[in-house]
Image (cartoon, rainbow, N blue to C red):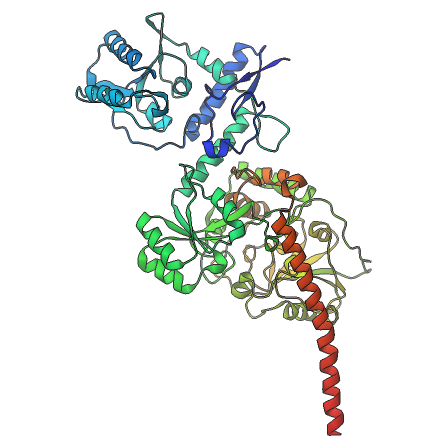
Length: 601
């Protein structure tokens, strides 16, 4: 089967320029979206394929420049697409009007884009002439779907993007050819649309069909619609601002503004009439009160649950984030978008099936929040006739511990509690990776840990470790959620987002708003598919969790920058110093204590 290229100049599948530049074309001979299609495809196959594609495009209103402003057009009219030559445009309008004598108020004329015309002053004079005769004149860029939905028929001098999209909307297309208008057969346009067979996403060595490419367009549209509400950001660390800008990019290609001072950010958001996106750990009660008084909506931003191939504390920007308008999902004392979704969303059969497939993919590829792949882990001799319990450590002072930990406030207290409930179990304690890297507080000397645990486990893959234990006992750690995916029993002593839905043994605070019983697939569908936002690691293009998992399997996309390597070295040095001080301070203190007692004697 032979193939030939189909360029983006006449295709109906397009992306905004700021995402186009980041994507890898199939061939360097053309710009961005390139499609390959078989020359020997039959007309019947092409038409059937195109009808399915057209139905999807129309339903989701994507295709063409779908990101342009959506203008309400009150009446349906005959649409004339003027050519970029002013002389030809005047002749074409006269020819069109004379061949189809309907009242002038029933015509709508679309002018060419400014970059394609010469002498704008004369074009403006032409527009004024038409407007004075009650003709609806459109000079500015407009969403093609809004335009075609309000059109009766299309009149043009060549088959272009709008002509192809007109067929999706079942609008007749009149093409001027050899001084006569001919209605273009829908089968011809379907064949042209059906030619778009294969499309390549960035960093993938395989093409995907146009039907699959439409899913990318849908994600892009949903992201742009969501981002319309965001005017500025506050509390974003310098090393993650570029990635956050990619997540929140507006339809004009510009990112929201970033501020360091809350008063300036609130003033700007109020002036713009938009929301203020705040990194959750930087949000204070004072800021919430001031935003409420100013009438500014707050959006709380945090790392997602499938984040990256590396640590955020190591300055690796996230490829998944959470944006919550109600509260923080780690705070059980107040509602959050996640809790609301878990309590109210009815998961469709299709979404349920997708969640089950996603779970299998996470398990098969050994995906956790910061890692992917079957990494070698520190083995341990599993004791006979004992339940093996994993207790994952957390960062001291972490928001989830502060807000959701209840009466237990640190890792050492948690270990004591777990041992008290399970005196005969084999307990494994695994320090948090950020603490181990030396970037966050919360380290406990091994000697103290081993008073209540049987083993301190370091390094390797968390997913592999979860396959070799029986239960996870945790305060609020995401490890509990990852353990549920792998069929492990989970006991919670705090109030993590996955507790209270009938899937865990709960020793934590009461959760009165969480009375619903969920299946594991429902929990996964809402938590990993509906709630977070995902982006590709290099381009920032919106993607699905399944696609991000594929990218996690490509180490070349996660090569550390110089700043990240410097941060790693800093963490190791800090950890060594901390360990040295701890090893010296405790014996010195004991020696001093013994001397004082001896002197008293």
